[in-house]
Image 1 (tube, rainbow, N blue to C red):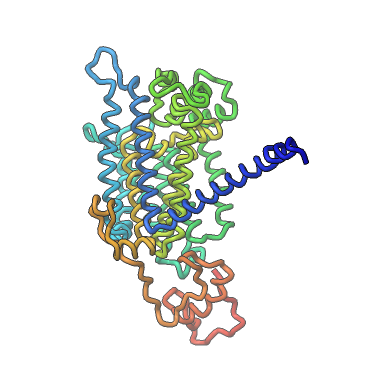
Image 2 (cartoon, rainbow, N blue to C red):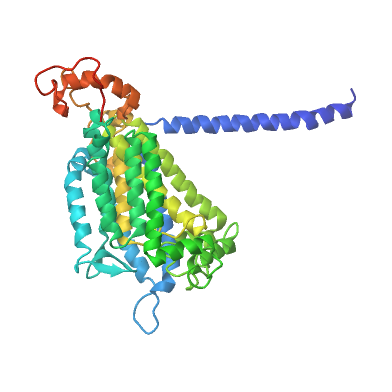
Length: 489
């Protein structure tokens, strides 16, 4: 072999091989370091803090850029920073709400959930009276001077917390349809009716997401979700036929070019803004859509301004943050032992990520416009406060993971714990079992076992615990034989 062949061999074959080996070693090192960091006791807690803080910072910057034109009013003394100052005030109040969500014990939050549902139902009914105010065609607000409250946002939180409490309390009998659906579904349907009476389609859709997430994490049968999906499609068609503006939204979604300057204005202008942004965007403050080309861009269509000023890269960062939220929130649900915390963490995560997906979906033209805000980024008072409360509850759930509880009770509260004066979480203690009513059909982590496993253990459980509503002997004093059909609903 000549010297030229040796050089060719070293540069032509060994060079790419060595580069591949170096890349594989680097990837392995990064994966090992990431796995080691995620295995730390408070990794999920720190990730929730980082995600909430980053999304909040992006929201502050984008609201500052988007609201300056809407705040300006010729011939008046109003400042171009009026909406931004209000949003900044809501962020400060949201930080306090976040701290309360982290600091209040989860047992107390669970105990107050039943009262919260009753209060929210009362507020939803009261807002339909003359005490409520109409904003953007929906009578869903209480307005007292400069302050305003949207009860449907608080009702979503109450439904999530109370629904998880009911499902955990009735865990032993969830294999029976009447216990799985009552009273959760009737209460949720009453909320739907009160919200649609405002009318508020976006709030109703988000309430539906909360209900479906509760039933999913409680282990409801899959055929129930097929029925819910069919009912949701039928309800959407009926609502679209009842109100003309909903039908116009669907028709403009199906044919956006039919009325580009009227019914399809916002959807078309959002796509133009995204297209103008390109890969890296025009730069902060340089977007043109906020100059009334895209009305109310600081509310529902702020993702279009992100695409215009920060480009495709900025949109990917926002989507990646919500993807990280989905990963961390479901990881918190999996790593906890308390079934109530598991259902709550999973439901709140699905709620936030689904709301972001719906908002981004109709901005990019994949869904009809429904008026759902982008969590933590869109301008809005009640929505921002409720979202920060959800992040606080998720962070509280992260501190109740077994490894986190052990670390916080043995090594101290840590930097963030001392800064926020957070008490040490209590370890999870399963409720005492009733004598003779073992959970032979229980699955790991508190999720109900499959129907077949639970129905196999149901006869023994019913004989041992007649207080579930089954008679130990039939009427007339004669005992039923072994051939009697069991599990009849």
